[in-house]
Image: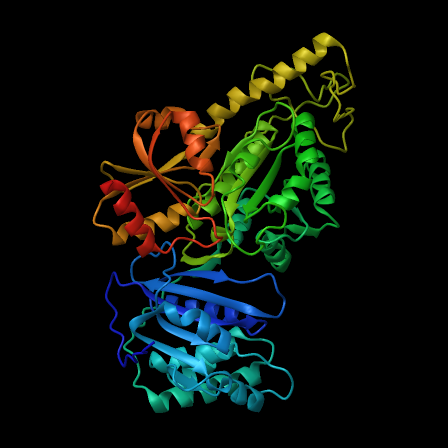
Amino acid sequence: MTYFIKTQWSIDLHDIHTIIIAGKAGEGVKKAAQVISGILMSYGRHVFQNDDYQSLIKGGHNYSTVSTSEAEVFSTSEQADLIICFDKRSVEERRVDLKCGGTFFYNSDDGDGSMGIGLPMTSLMKKAYNTNGNLCSVPIGIFCALYGHSKQELANIITGEFRKDRDENLALAGMIYDCVEERLAPFARKHIPVAEHLFSGNQLISLGAWTAGLDFYFGYPMTPASSILHYLALQKDRLGVQAIHAESELAAINMAIGASFAGARAAVGSSGGGFALMQEAFSMAGMVEAPLLCILSSRPGPATGVSTYTAQEDLFFALHQGHGEFARVVASPDSHERAYSLAAELLSLAWELQTPVVLLTEKHLSESSTCLKLQPEQVPHADVKIGLENDDYERYEITDDGISPLLFPPSDSVIKWNSHEHLPSGLRTDKSQPITDMKAKRASKIITAKQAVKKYQQIAEYGEGENIVFAYGSTVLELREAARHTSKPLHIIAPIYLEPFPLEELAIYAGRVIVVVDHSCTGLFASFLKEKLQTKILKNILRYDGRPFDPHSLATLLEEAFDA
């Protein structure tokens, strides 16, 4: 393969420029990509960062992709303008991703001289570090040299981004910078400071729930939901949320239900395997009418599956979570902005309806990052029914809407939550009529929930025309990016609320011929739409290898589908 070295990178408004950093786990690949994303944002550019990594603490092959443009970016491209590889395996794996005219840097201490521009990365790292180090600051030094930063600007970036091994990283980045300056003329650049920050989907879910009053988050680490626990623990002093690392998923959800009994707003999160362990307690939350936000971030299954990749195989699992009949709300964010607002909406709905709710997302949104300027907005207000303290207080009072007044300890009233079937007072019963009455009470919440969700945006639509494409969750991001590369105008329709399903809003598409894009191997979302809307599927475009669609490839598949 031939590598072309570009000496100037002209920046046009709608061009997408992609950078790939590749190496072993533990070498600082993700951190380098995050720092470079921050630098690009300081130019006034939008970024989207996605991390591809194996379930290994050290070794293997990891890479981070950053796509950037002066226009908004919705997903990353597989073809890169700049690739930086730390080891020989990364060169072998990623060299096919280089665009013609792109720039390729490799570690000459671990590769031959026929590939791109070799830099002695490992040798320079050993000079900079007295003990074991990593190559994290190498891409930053390369990037700053290419984009015309001064060496002092590079030093300021390293100083601001690194607490640990700051002097070593300064030395390594400086030596790399000198090597690159000797070989290449700087790329053109623009510098327009903006007040934006790089957020991952999980960080935005955390912040959204916090705006709605989250008090406790309980979790047992399971990729790709783990970083919610980590982020809230890190931000404990600033946000005031207690992040509890439980001993298991069972403990986490039972602790959360206990916290809600005491009046605290609580959430739990996991992936499919961990959420499977939570099912019994999820059903108990339905019976005791506990307000609870559950975050399900999907990865390929079954069982352990592919633990660090993305999938949408848990759609029906989420929709039918828990045994027995009770009201559930399930919704899925179609963007990073929506991850923020939807988390707040769902926590508020949980308390308004006194029922468990599910925020269904995927690794692609959970762990990818983009730049956002979070605007102060109206925080959803939960209309919580509060009871009066007296001797006649009934925790499960039968009401027209199925929602009973709440009280919390300490209280002069006796408050009884019961996971068995019960009377309005909370006392256990197995008599026929009370069972019928309480089941009818809980069922009435299903109707109440349909009305409650109407105050929020239930579907999102992008583009217009006759080429109708349905998707949900982070697949919508991939579609919006692909729409830039197809000659056919796409009308993208994304249900946000999946249960209750927004049938009234989507009724105009009943029986229509549509294309569905989904990350499952059996076309779960198409089956769901056939059931709800009796749609006719022109083409089911599926990817189920754990990777997001490349926008150019997806654009080609869409054109082929509508031309068929």
